Length: 417
Ligand code: NAD
Image 1: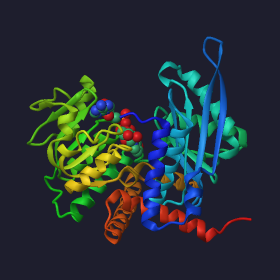
Image 2 (image 1 turned 180 degrees about the vertical axis):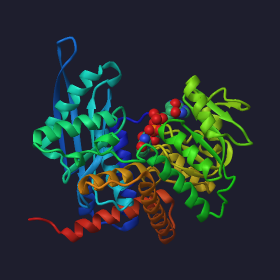
Image 3 (image 1 turned 60 degrees about the vertical axis):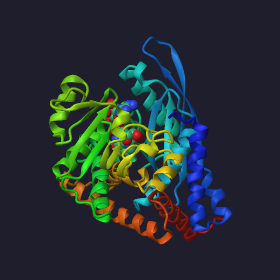
C-alpha cells in the first residue's frame, strides 16, 4: 500500500480524532493538536560533484513540545512531502508520550534521491540543511535522529555542523550518532528489543507461554533480524521469516543466527537449509502465536486480514496494519500491539543517548537494555490498563493514553499570553 502524503495525514488525524472521542476532548484541544506548532520549509542548494548546483526541498515539522523538546527523525527520499512529514511528526508526539519520555514530536525530510548521490554530495546536503534549520533545533529545543536513508554518519555531520556554528561541541543535538561520538551502546538492536519485550509481556498478559511460542517475522532487516535473535534466545520458536525475495518456513524452528549468516552470504533468507520456501503473503497467513510485521507499511489490509491466523500481531514496522484491517482483526479477536508502543524501543534508547550526552556519563549495553526493558514494561502495562478501562483495542488505548498525557501537559501549562 502506498498512501499519498495527504491520505497519510488524513489517517493520522483520524486516529487522533478517535482517541479524542474516547477521551471526550474539547474542540479547542482538537484544533490545537491537529496542527503542528511550527513548519519550516527550506531550500537547500548543493554543489554537485560535476560542479553544477541543485536545489532540494527540505522541511522540519515540529508538531508539539508540550511534554518536552521536539524529537523525531530526518528522512531523505525522492517523494518526501510536507503532509507526510507532518503526519509522521504527529505520530512522534504520540510515540514519545506513550513511552512517557520528556519529549514532544517532530520529523524532518529532504526531497532527494540518496541512492543517486555520492557521499560527498550527501555530506554537503546534510550540512546545508542543518544550517537552514539551525535556528529551530538544539539539545533543548529539537533533537533529530536517523530515519529512512539517513544513518549514524548523517547524524555525525549534523552534530559537527551544529557544533561548528555554535562554537561548542554539542553531541546532544542529535541521537543515533556513532558510538565514538557519543552514540549509545545497544542502539542497533533497541527497536527489536522493544518488540521482543512486547511479545514477552503479551504472552504473560494473554496466558501464552513464551517458551516454544510460535513466531513468524516478516522482514529480516534491522528490526526483524535482531527481534528473531532475541526471541530465540528467550526460548521462543521462530517458525518463519522473510525478506523482499520471499520467506522460509520450518515447523521445527529456525536458528536466526544461522539464517543471518546465510543471508549475509547469499543476500536473502531464501534457500536456508531444511526449510520450505513460502511467499510473503503465505507468511502473513501462517497459523502461529505471534506475527511480527517488520518490513513495510500496509502489509495487512482488507484483502488479507480475514485470513490472518496469528493470535497476536506485534507491529515492528510503522503502520503495517491498515485501519480497515484493524476492524476485521478486532472482530476476529486477533490482538494487535500497535506501532507507537511496539516499535518505540528506538526512540526510547535515543532518549537514553541524549541523557548520557547531557550528563557526559556513559552506560554499558546491559545498563541501557535494562532501562529500556523497564520503560517498555511500564508503557505496556499502562496501555493495557487503558484497554481495560475503556474496553477498546490496544491501538486506541495507546493513542488515548498518549493524547491524554499531551493534553494534561497543555492544561497544566495554561495558555500564554
Ligand atoms: P530495513 O531496511 O533494515 O529492513 C527491512 C526488511 O524488509 C528487509 O529485510 C527487506 O528485505 C524487507 N522487505 C522489503 N520489502 C519487503 C516485502 N515486500 N516483503 C517482505 N519483506 C520486505 O528496515 P528496518 O530498519 O528493519 O525497518 C523496518 C520497519 O520498521 C520500517 O517500517 C521502519 O519504519 C520501522 N521502524 C524501524 C526502526 C528502527 O530503529 N530501525 C524504528 C521504528 C520503526
